[in-house]
Length: 350
Image 1: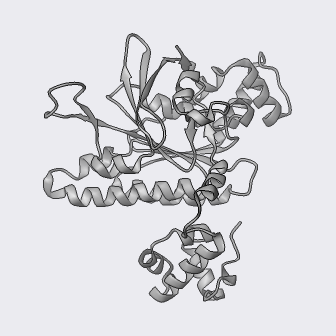
Image 2: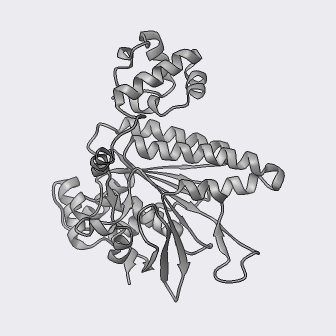
Image 3: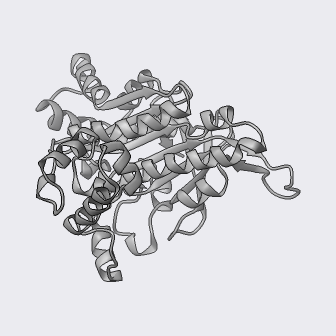
């Protein structure tokens, strides 16, 4: 449902219609837009765009200063998606929140990086399932959007992970989604899996331009489900940097690559803020030849991604099916690590 844009000062019915046609249906999206981009996409004058943005910021009550106490109150709207790995959830929990649930935070970008086969895609698949769980079982009761740039998404993994949930969680989901069911009945389990699959919107990104467009299209999907019982609460991009890395080669292309990557990350963060959704981006790595001591592995994306990711998790291979999750950067959490196993049934505690 769109806001009443025509009621914004300086925005009449004609301009409101142009804004809606350009995908700007809500005050908060207009308020966070760049004036030149808004003017271009909605085909309105620069001054009209500036006036619309200012009015939207006042209407949505964003863009100005607020006290630390007010910010603390706003933080209560932030949700968390449990990883269902207690040790990892605790790693993503601040000292003052020990009586609350830990997990991947909404309104933030969580970056997971690691070598090929480390488990990045396993993590994103698991979170696509977990976000749909009832809140009392660690989820947010929401949908997920998955932008796939490496042909990594496999619906069969969703099936396996839903079937691999604890019996108590499966029964709670059956009660919520189907009005009841028998966990031992294959038909009931098949129906539950179908429901989980239907709540995941997937698109394959063929190049950087297409990937950036899909991030914008994700907002249209989120708008469609915004006022439903299952709004979009998770956006996954796997991987964030694959196309950027392959299409912009050499130092001469670095500036343009970083500029486009910065815009893409901005769109992802805007999505997370507008829809109170978690954003998880999987990232590739490279070896740092200047590193003589310690682990030479570092994530792609440079400072632009490093400064934009609210939480950075480095996944490392361990023995057999074990993986070590290292929290290497966070605005309010200490570094630490947790161990989990990758099973057919999904991510499981050690």
